[in-house]
Amino acid sequence: MERSSWASDDVDIEHASPARVYDYYLGGSHNFAVDRQMARQAMDLWPELPLIMQANRAFLRRSVRYLVSQGITQFLDIGSGIPTEGNVHEVAQAAAPEARVVYVDVDPVAAAHSRTILAGNQHADVVQADLRDVTTIFDHPQTRQLLDPTQPIGVLMVAMLHFVPDEADPASIVAQYRKMMPPGSHLVLSHATHEGRPDQAGSHTELYRRAGAPLTMRSRLEVEALFDGFDLVAPGVVFLPLWRPDSPADVDDHPERFTGFAAVGRCR
Image 1 (spheres, helix red, strand yellow):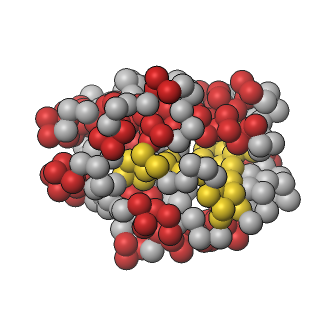
Image 2 (cartoon, helix red, strand yellow; image 1 turned 90 degrees about the vertical axis):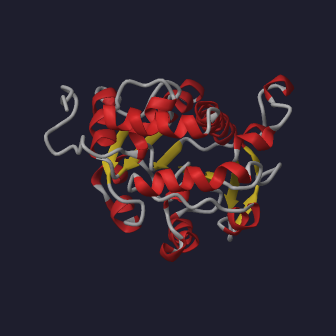
């Protein structure tokens, strides 16, 4: 398989990566044949997947603008993937030029490409780390340089926690971040669910399992439980298009078909 110039030798190009598959769904170019193959297999089972991923990215943009409106100007994007058009620092800095962003991803392609596109941006950087390494992420030199731990922060876990199995206790991971977040901080979260389209859940979950990226879809109640210690911002935990849409025209007649929940919580 041909290695692109932007992929270093330590990047695994033989196995599909969720970050690169997501990039493909969004129309990006930082993916390999193995990622495109997995994406096409998933789309054969579920043709609406690109629309779902685009709705997820649209929610990210709306949530970042909301946080800026609430005075949040520093962001920690966990599991950021490969930043494509409309990423966090672009949206945040368009509204508040002083906004600072630290992207975090364990995938070396995501981290390497992030460094490339962020070159010259003094207010954004990337940390390559696992989301479970909470102390490492907050103590990392790039994080310490850009983020003020005494001021409210926006922590984003967008389309991330469904890759954390139940036995890894995602609620405890979120709780560790909450302990590091000053009062007034916000958590932004989206999560895959079997609610809405249960007929598609099994085949899609099996595909990700075979690809080595097991996916755990969760119910609305399970997603709400992740916000322990946070006050949910209205409208609470809702399907992706229903979280503070820019226009009523942006809301699909059947928002449940997007099979992802979105929510924002304020740290008490």
